[in-house]
Image (cartoon, helix red, strand yellow):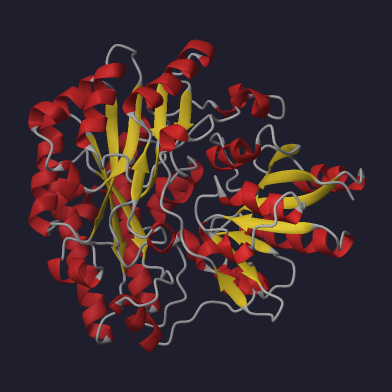
Length: 506
């Protein structure tokens, strides 16, 4: 068996796909040091055929996967298991949120050998050097690593401080292009005809107890400087004529200085862009700064509103200064500066009793209605609360006390009952009763009928008019039960909910 490496991105969706920056960054860490290939499950009709074909040559030993919770598990788990069965000498290395947060079932599976627990810019090449006999470093001393020692005990090494992002190797875009043309990843979205996906920072400086990022980055954040970001955007503008950018950072707007500098650099390039941030962070920007961002192409922001209930915000350990009143004031400001606030709400957190859980759900439904009355253009994304294993938090203890537990084996994670759990669409939480889920989902259907998402650019003209007409009385009078007529129209027009599949794209 040779020592070549497969870096695999399991399929995450069935629609137009974004550039897989995650695996490209992994490639950058070993580029010029080891021979490797990319396999993007989103772009392969049969990824297993490509992967097994590589292993059949006898030149490959390492099968390296980035694994996010949800759809990617449907390929990651059976493929890794099969590779280990067919090639016992192979080595499976996993990275991504799922592997880090659910490391116990991964390591106990018998077919996951190592986990990169966070950024792998140093960890991945150091691990390969040890495995290939190029280094006598002890595994225990390699940071951001999870492995099983000779005694069968799972070991988590010390976390590495986030690296200076500008000092990292450049992404090997041209090498990736030899496997999958970059052109094929540029999608038509509501922002532009050629939308490019980009990652400009790592981590988040907050420690919300409901967020899967927290255990990985420990409330740390590092970003590329604005000129570095602009250099990459300019490269794709010049070579691929992009006209829109999705920034897939966990928190793009953390540094106001960086955002302002980037806005000034990109202001004359006719590029529209979208990013994710926090309301209490961006609320510190002045109206003048927000208008500059809009002029520079900032069309929409994704913001974690979570809830308008201050008591529940505290339960979530949201941190910062966000409040229900701030959310209302903020969406009013966004209306004035012509930036669409895309607000995510998490409904269905545990409570002291069933009555309290339902009251909190109804409270937030009414709060969302109030947000829409302030700014009708505000996008609303509704998630059902799905626990994440942030052990030590009060919220985690509440979910354990309520009787919730995660699957103990990888195979359980791809059973139908868990398939949609990490999309926050089908939580197996004992405190959320069927009638509560029906209430949330029926309200969501009526809301999406009366206020169709701006990110699905097909829903316009007579379609938008008919949806508003059909759902108008329901929304006005709060009649949410059995909204079958709206569901039929959504099905006919293949209405795309961004919380499930991202922006509609072609």
